[in-house]
Length: 475
Image (cartoon, rainbow, N blue to C red):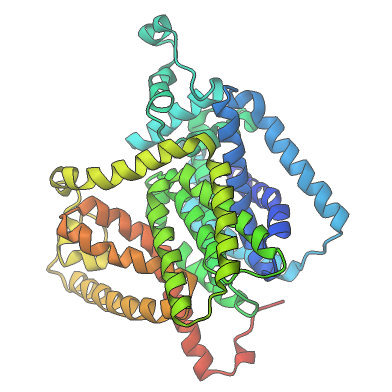
């Protein structure tokens, strides 16, 4: 039993929350307290990643600045909250803490059993991230190896250096693992799954914040946490060791929280724009491929509010301008690499579709309806059994329900629905291109947003059948 490693995962999660809490407190405006605390972990993670990326690009190895960066940020936030003399609502802390712990045990139980030996699938992606983490731990971002060291293979991580110094490949995952290595003295292989599970919790907190848009929604946000945290396709990305994807979905949910809202007046629009810019910058640094979804969602939000004549145009432009300026500052010299990766991803999907479909043919069959909701195992050749047929039927009904609910909730300006809408639309070009891998990834991307929308729809149905005082959240 390795319960100490589960405690370490929780410590990382709480540390990110502590680092981000003061930023949210200063910039989030009049957000309800629960949503503030749920946003804190992803805010702390975004701040740490952006600062560490800039420091790495100046040529400083992570092992040199990592402990000082984390220590300084944590100390500043401890002093901040001690000076504020803030009281915690322990009943609420216990409720949410129990929810996060339940999801962590569901996903991370192999860590308890196997300890450092748990490497899940041990796929090629993980190997690349481990070599990259070791590279950033020992070297600066643009440092290239001397020829004699490269040829003699003294340090295997040197082979990855050209990805970053020349290719400008996204590196937030590697730098995050290297940061943990610098404060824990663990190797990259020992650190990876621990950091991965902590980021999984950060991602869930951001998703719950997406639902908790106002006071009175704490309970439905809590149920969204449990539903999303136990969803097969959502958990699959973590079991496949896709840490960049987990980072990207956390940043996407945070962008939706910060951008898909009506900005406040009296100067608050500037502060809210800065917070949104931090999340957008993190999105471009950690997983720029998801950026088009938030851009489409913002455009959809503006279109609907303009159609309703409910958009304060001047204040909203100030808000968006502040967010854009902060994004440029936060992304810094990482912007060319992020834009290159977005364009490369868009142009390479069609060319690679034929080869990829040999590996991911599932979503071009009726079984894809069940796979998209995690109702059937991937690669199951048996499709004639009644269980499989029932799962296909259930998946089809869920797709129809999700389509109807997303359209309705998007018109109501529900942030989760505004993000889910472009993901649903993306199914059409991916099918036309016969891009099985794209559909496989999209099923994981869309899962948290679709499940949140469905959870909200069920909550609205309960509100119509029960008095509001019977569906209330704890204080």
